[in-house]
Amino acid sequence: MSELLFAAAAGLPMAAGWSLHALRLRHRVEAARRDPLTGLLTRDAFAERATKVLAGGRSAVYVIDLDRFKEINDTHGHAAGDAVIEATGRRLAEWAAVNDATVVRLGGDEFAAVARVLSLADLSWTLAELTRAIEEPVMVDGRSLTVGASIGAVAYDPRTDDVDLSALLRLADEQMYAAKRSGADWLTAVDLTAQSRTVNGRRAGRAGTSGGTEAAA
Image (tube, rainbow, N blue to C red):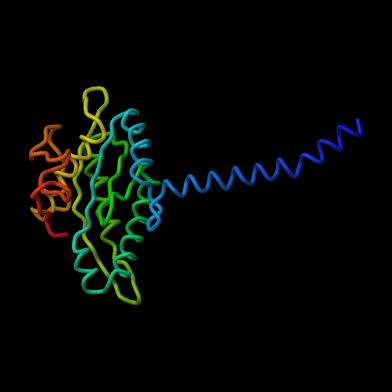
């Protein structure tokens, strides 16, 4: 019996070492799934979680692009721009926690989200709350900096709609671009039919498409 107890005691440091190693590995894996500036999910992690949200019931997909962000970068420098992006990410994370949403930083000053919605009225209320949160001033080195947001949204119901996350992001992006051009805070798709041409799987005119130019941010 004493030999068994000795063997078990001798194994405790090894077990503790493996537990610590496993914990560190989990932390590294989780860090790799997060954007280093905002702490939001990366694209792959977002796609995995967002697909599950969409399969679970009536939802909405949002694409969010900041307005006047280039002006802040040009006037106050990239450090100020990073501070605005970081603050936006924090606000989106807080909004996500309240609305049980999944959020991603797509890159630059563009973000996307997926959240459950109960109705079109619920979607409109959520868009208003999202806009209000993003447009709160950000204090940087004693200066109050304010950006706007152009948001595109599309509603989805797995019982009747047969499109994937990529197509929904494409539709929401189209509405975001239309909102930016019209000066509206947000626009929602009336159906699941794309209104503009697709190049390389993206809306014509987006960065990364042949011969296209983006609207000014």
